[in-house]
Length: 484
Image 1: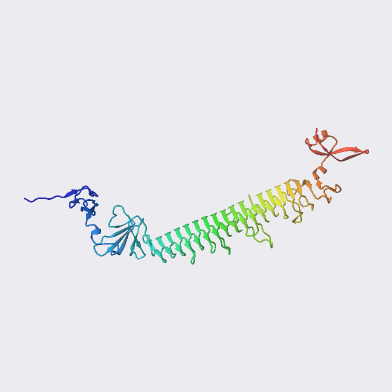
Image 2: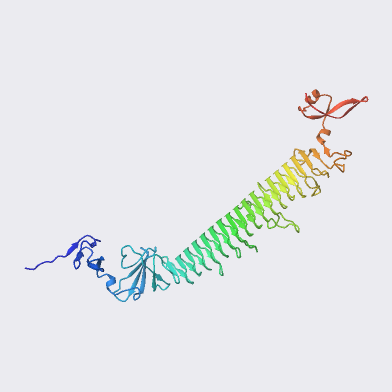
């Protein structure tokens, strides 16, 4: 009678015997996988070094990394796997998973990762590296029905209509045109200019760089030629342009422009006025603010504020100027203008309030509503003038070092109190005019007592002209303080 010999076996997929399951020379079979295993000893009988070997493994077929090469390749778009057909005939296929995790001879062995160096023609080199793919030329991954091309080595293009002419550049997305080296481009229809335009990072759509070391994120932004190390975030913003070179600049928001080195522009267009930083080391933020090219270190914030002038007089600058608020403006160095529609024409001066103006000599200050430091024609009377209050009368032709306006409108200006030039030539000289002018007091009513002054509206502590009889005649040329 025929005898059936059955070897040690398992019908469970993936089961592999351990060294304790087999004796030397004993065979085990996985009947589900169709694989046979034996135990081997590479040590001695006294000091055994035992392991399990699958019979028919590629290591037993004489193949090695030095005598196997790639004959052809195919790419499965559904799984993202590149299969490399190896030679000589009969050698197992090699598979590259595009996520870079493993390359296998038909399968992974015990979870180990083996990746070959691959060039543009997808032939393998003799060396083996681990856990990454080295590109000696370039790699193109095409979308279905589209194309992605590389014209320089070490570059990667992936997507639809991506043209990559840069060394070691990466283009992902659609309709990119990449020139220059070491660029990273993603999104839709972004470009780097022909020439040496290196090391840019661009994401979004319709962005363009003509310079080096730039960063763009958003839509329709441009770094113009020569403006290195610029950063743009937002839409329709730019760095450089108009003949300017803007190194290390930042532009962000909507339709902002940084057109000088180390300049910062962030905001939005307002009444067709772009937020613009044209001064070196300048800062323009919010809506329609602008720092002009003659305002180095200028700062403008708020709405439609300005520092400097597009067409300054020869030698005129507004460096270190600061404008804040709405439509306020600084015209000279070290000036400050704030509030609403205030103007500082004074070097190291200040205009703050609503419609306040510091006129154009050193250190003039205007604080209030519609006030202006004293002028003659269009030029400040003197330096160091200070005006406060409302609608002062500023064109009297007098030097008013301190004045208080109490007018009610542009057409009805009035200065109640001012300090003007002293006629004395020294502190010790008590002759001449003291310089104090109390026009409102001089033009006020005269009273005969505190009681009548009170009835006339003079408050406790208030000054009033006192009517007295001197040498038989009434006079009102005396000043009293109401105390009762």
